[in-house]
Image 1 (cartoon, rainbow, N blue to C red):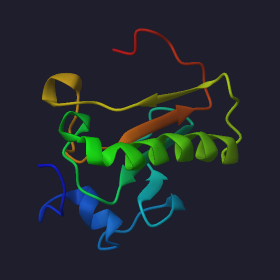
Image 2 (image 1 turned 135 degrees about the vertical axis):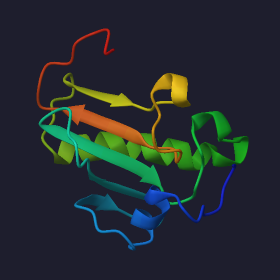
Image 3 (image 1 turned 90 degrees about the vertical axis):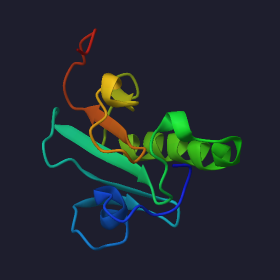
Image 4 (image 1 turned 180 degrees about the vertical axis):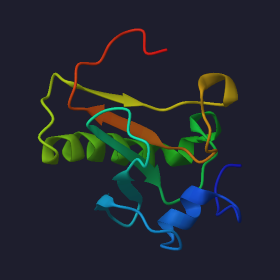
Amino acid sequence: MKGGEIVNCIFCKIAAGEIPCTKVFEDDQILAFRDLNPEAPEHVLIIPKKHIDSLAYATPEDHKLLGHIQLKIAEIAKNLNLPEDGYRVVTNVGEGGGQSVFHLHYHLLGGRPMKWPPG
């Protein structure tokens, strides 16, 4: 799906305020909130309010939104006092890539050393 709200999408419901979350940042395009099952001391999910299934379904018309997300992630990391050389940003694409919620989202992880490969 390229865009629009999906009726049973949990992230669309969180973005719409139907399901509570611990917000870290919000503007008219994106929402950032704490992950319920953190994998690091700081684990924030960043979602566009526009429904896009995954990065594989982003289109050229989404380029401004995607750039906005990237810049805001850096700002959020700074506001969380994550060092410039010490955090990770991940988006999983498809089931084979580990995606479990099919709404484009980014994980901002920090507060501990990040190892490679991640899994």
